[in-house]
Image (cartoon, rainbow, N blue to C red; front, side):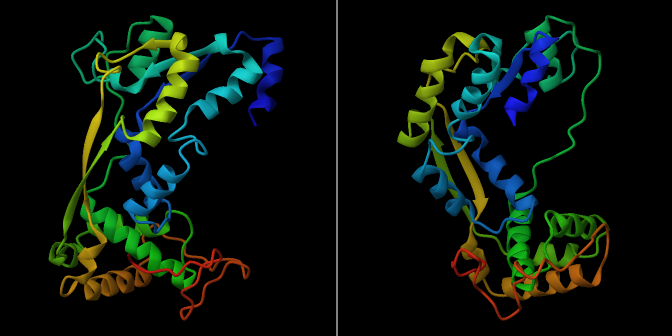
Length: 274
């Protein structure tokens, strides 16, 4: 797809601006985003897939993306911004810094506008994201999932206080995991981008060359063994099916449909809340 943009070189001078974010800092956000869009994989399952093949994906190994752009536009066209500098780069106003302000000031040396870009895609509470993950699993079983429909319906019902009592009755078990930039898979992929593209960074946080650790708290799947939680899940799911708030539920195509009695995905893995 990058090659399709090569025609732009004929009439334009292009620069590729890439925000680099440490995987140990972004992993939980990436996982949350996958759940928002219909995934049922647990956080630990998600991490294990990345750790098994750290060089095979763009999240743990962003140099894959940079190689693609460099092959078309040249390495000199790339500018890399350390995501860690976003909240630390001075701005021309007293309001919270953001990607837009950082982009304009570091790349083009343009004064930031005196406003703050609103945060649209906010992170969800660990309890809500685990409930949505489990609801995704149930919807996949029934063939009633289309991208982010479950998440939209759940949040809309929660906002309207339709399911607040059920949600507040849920008993979470919170776990904590620490990710480090010195973990072998993360360190290896990080070293690759630094070795190849160190001269293309236009900003680095003061701690860029130090070990970065991130303690992540999440609602563990063992929560579903707590008394009453599975019943709550069932009631939430039935409420979502009865309601149609911003929800367009469609049966998937016959080749992907999963019946209520089927617990086997196309991959052959058994599907379960945990």
